[in-house]
Image (cartoon, rainbow, N blue to C red):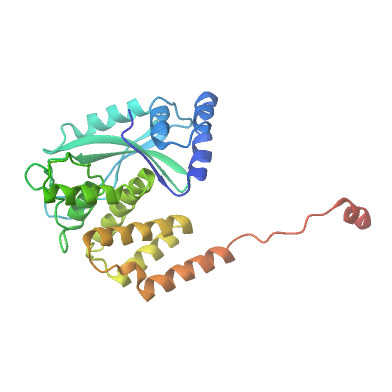
Length: 285
């Protein structure tokens, strides 16, 4: 069973992508619902044609840096095979983590993605702390990515009359103000930012405006869609909002960089030509 379905972009584009990779019956079942939990159930047993790639998400190295995604296999036809291949490659998960395998659709490209998911006891224990872990400001990028994954998936606690529990519940309900798919894509985007920041020896939290601008520009140079770039900017804004620190995505350099990216994207669109109607064709002949 897939642990997650992550969509970086629009649901409509993701659905079109999936329709091109699955059998007619699966395609029909996907068309009948927009519920991503239902998509997860359907795609857990689907066979993909052509088969997909399998990546292992970057993890924290002993020196605190964040490793890039690692290709594990090509030509993986279904989720069960991806789960087995990932398990054979990584063996036992580190203490406090479990291996999860999901489906990620990024700019029209589907792939299986394996990652180490922290258990609830890692960095967060309602029975002892009564609150989410504090923001890892100034800490390694891998720690930032792990913290965001934990706090953005906080469970709603049981009522016990304590103020700490009520505050923990307020945090959990705040996260539920956003759709589940939005939080899933934010987690993937924050992980991508942390990998990029670590690869360039830059602070991940707090991020600097000029670094965010460079990150978004780098995505544009890779040919990423403007909608995907906007999503990553929104994810970084939400990351800093949760950490309760200044948000760098409103920096004038970030705003101007995005404006330039959008302008270039519009200019790169093919020019639409007037259709040759029957009357005009007759005149030409």
